[in-house]
Image (cartoon, rainbow, N blue to C red; front, side, top):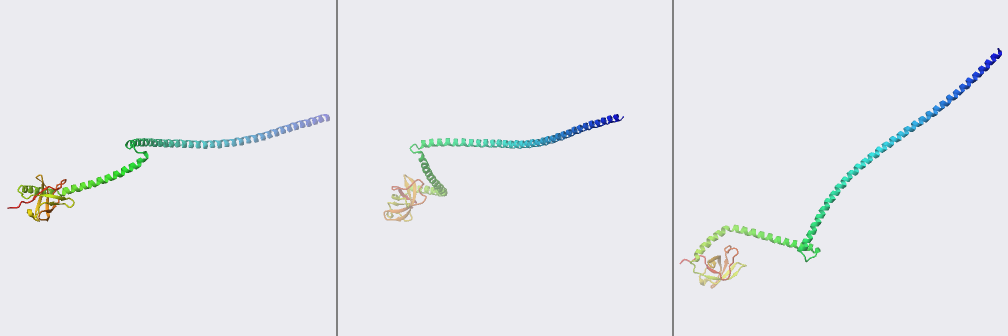
Length: 265
């Protein structure tokens, strides 16, 4: 009995030792599993953190890529705009170049024409020649203006004297009627055109009086009127009546002088 109890004790002790050893092994295994889980969890946490950091880097890279894309897009738009501006500028330059070429062609044609007009002068002398011609042109234009003014004045004088011409023509008709019965006759010996007077080769001895009015005729036509200014025995100085001589005509030596009014008998 005692032996059985001893055996059972040994068995119990063995079983206890077996179970204790088994529990120890299980604890060690659990401890190893726990440590493995902790290590795995740590590694997993690190992996997650690494993944998060990688994701953050990727997002930063993506944002940077988007910024670079935006910058490249803006640069491209700027380049396109710059290209358009350059093309416009190039077109303007082309137009200006064509204008310059056209002007150059005109200049060349002008040079050829100048050389044809002035074959005896050098090209560098043309400016002086042109200046001389321009001065001559100004001078001629001034003369033309003076002539136009003179012409205008003459037309004004003609218009002003229109009624006087009609009156004179009436007097001329009257005088021509008197010429036929006029017995006095003398000749002009000289004419002073500066002071508008003549010398007549007859005086008081021929019957002239200080108030005598005279007519000047040539070829049977009346060409002017005279008024006695100074009377001598055999000659007289007579003023030419203003407006009595037709425009374009003039008195001269040898013209005949008769009385304007025939003396009544």
